[in-house]
Amino acid sequence: MWIIVCDIPQRNYRKLSIMSLIGKLVSELEINVAAEKYYRVFKEKAFHVPTISPGIFQQVEVHDGDWDDHGHGSVKTWKYTLDGKDEVFKEQVEFDDEKYAMTMIGLEGDVFTHYKTFKGTYHVVPKGPEHSLAVMSLEYEKLDDGSPYPYSYLDIMNRVTKDIESHLK
Image 1 (tube, rainbow, N blue to C red):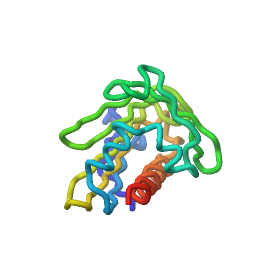
Image 2 (cartoon, rainbow, N blue to C red):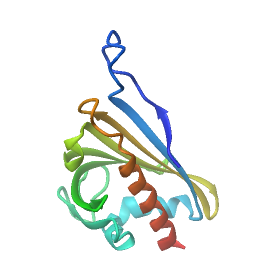
Image 3 (cartoon, helix red, strand yellow):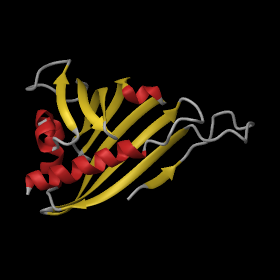
């Protein structure tokens, strides 16, 4: 399920005919996993994601630090498949341990063919001992009006969340 939370118009408000270039997409999924366990996959075990979700991810590499110290501020490159095409995404990660949120700020990669900025967030809200609400969001700025909305990327985030849920059960 996709919900467009906000779609901020072009900064030059005088050009009313210009389509929105800056936006945010949000998806929510109820999962049967404790919030802390889901969050720890990204915080402590990101190297397992290609094994957890092999139909999407082929590889993840750490560029700053090593796997024992890949927390806040670390830089990783993800190799994945989107719509049958192999792509690469280099990101810097930010963690918020209190909110169980992980944000991937895009630095380089195939997404920048269509987007000027690209940031994805996984946030999990505890709803019970083994029940949570996973909230995935994408904030982006398109290069131009012809750039597509990043629905396929949000779909990947949903699929990874479901794969993590299956893995942790």
